[in-house]
Image (cartoon, rainbow, N blue to C red; front, top):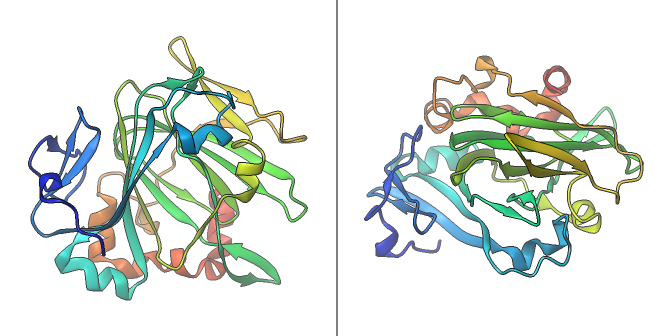
Length: 275
């Protein structure tokens, strides 16, 4: 486990909103600072050098940061319990601003396969939670023939929690004026795959800055993708995503509620009602 330098241990910034952990966010550096007793297993930063292949403007040549990723964040006292249930909680900061008219975003990915359900491969699901800022989560499902079958642009505000069903690729876009801080909860057995999204220069739609909001522009590298439906997050308290309760708090107290993140093949009827 990589150690977080002392200068990044809760020495500046303000407490991250909606997060029941002593973690501060410094707006000047766009970094998180961890307080006593908080574990963070790995950190990484992604800049335009790594993002050019998935941007609408492929030759965007201004070098600037896009997002920072903090993997395996938890209280030391919760570490063994989360590990026992194969759960990993991460924090991500997406910078504000645009690149070539497109809002800054994460690169986008699909998930590895968990198991088969009725002879069909099932990939791991995931939960996203907005802590501060405003996001659009772009989701796209891919059929067995490689064609996109469904596209959604999901608007989310602080407190919103989105369950990403199996089979959906996803990217996070910061459509606000301030940095976006969000969390994810996922099986620690899950791996990210980037192939299709990287090959097609991003998700099947780009989120562009527009007066008073955003606009969706189709990615021409996807031949027959359906038009994206714009929607809002739905609340599912029985799946551990009650809007009023922080995701980390639920995961730490009731990790067994998230068995569907490790064994999605057992819950396909549930996921069918979500998509």
